[in-house]
Length: 120
Image (cartoon, rainbow, N blue to C red; front, top):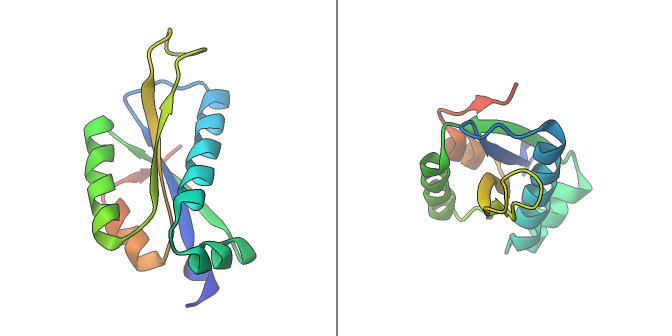
């Protein structure tokens, strides 16, 4: 596989107003957990040995994240749904903030993330 074709993504919920620092921390959790959970260790290691492309996207809501999980499952792509414990931002209420996917090839990525926008 061409090394530049491997990528990971984090998809944030647009219906949450996360402070930048919290969003960065949640993205770190999502990338690390999805990579760690990847069952194809050869693919995961190839990703780490090469470009390590990372993309940040946004989905309208939690329901959309669950639909994206179903797409990832169908393609056999690793994913990690991240829940914040609510210690600083969500007043003690555990809240799903984002979804990490990958590593995966460009075709799988495009199939899983179709219709989503880049985070601004």
